[in-house]
Length: 404
Image (cartoon, rainbow, N blue to C red; front, side, top):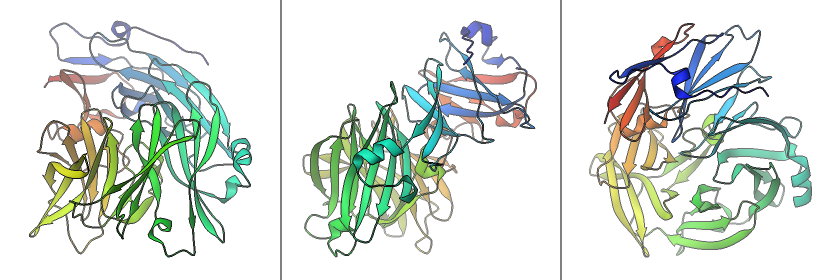
C-alpha cells in the first residue's frame, strides 16, 4: 500500500511563539478525529458521499515529534478503531463479528505503517477442537502488548466454554486456547462466573472472573502467555470491600464497548495495572455514592482513591467499566446518566470529568475537567486541544497547545 511519510514541519505550520497551529487541507474533507492514547490524535479525511471509501490519516502529536500521513482502503462504510494506551499497534476492523469465519483488519503501527490482513479463525479453532466459528458468541476484542485478542463464549448442552484467540502483532500467527470450562447444570459458584481480560503482566495476559459467594468469594485469576499457554492461577479474596452490584461493561476502544456487551451482578471489577491488582466499584456512605478504588497490599485491599457519583440512583441499573491508562485507571459509571471518572495512581482524590461515551474515542478526556466539550490529548507538558465543531472541514484544521 502506498505510504507517504512526512516530517512534522511539512505537515504542521507553527511558529515558535504561537500556541495555535494548523494542519493543511487534503484532497477530501476532514470528518473525524480519534485519539490513540499515548501516541497522538488521528485526523481522518474521506469522500463524504462514500463514492470512494479511501481514508486518509494524519497523525498529530507533540512539538518536535515526527508526524506522518497514511492511507487505508476499507471495503466497508464503517470501520471500528481498537486500541489501548501506549500500545505499539492499533487496528481498524471492518467487522467485529466474524463473517464467513473471518475478520478483515488494517493494522496501524505507531510509526505509521499499515498492514492489511483477512484473518481466518477456522484453522486455529480446528486445532483447538470441534468448535465452529458460527457457534461462538463474541464478548470482547482487546489489543495487548504482544497480540490482538478476541474473547468468545461457546455453549453446548453440557458446558459453557470461554475461548480466547490471540493474533500476534508482528507475524499475524493465530493461537486459540480455552480459558475456562464451566458445567451448565452445576450449582457451584465457580461454574457461574464470566471471564474477562483484567490486564497484563509483562507480555502475558491476565484473565479474571468474579466469585460471588462462599469462602473463596473474590476473583479467580489465570495468566496466559500470548501463545495461549497458562503460566499461573490464583484466587484473590474480596475482604475489605463493600461494593454495590453492577453490570460490568466495556469502556474505550475495545470490542465489548463497541458491541455493548455486559455481564450483570459484579460486586467489583478487578483491574491489573503497573503489575498490581486494583478493584473498583460503587460504595454507599449513607445516601452518598462514591466510586472507590482499592489496591491489593499483601492479602488486604487498601483504599487508594475515590470520587463522588452525583448521578447514582438505587432505582436505576448501574453499569461500571474501566480503561487502564499510564497515569491511572479510567472508569465509566452509568446510572441515571454516564460519567467519566479518573483515579490516578498518585492521588487519593479522583477526577470527575463529566459525561462521556462508553466507546469513547478520546480517553484523555478523563484526565481533566478543563476544556469542556473539546477533544483533548494529554502530552508530556501540554494539552493538545481541538474543537470538533470544525467538522466537516474542506479547509485546514486548527489545533491549540495549552500548558498544563
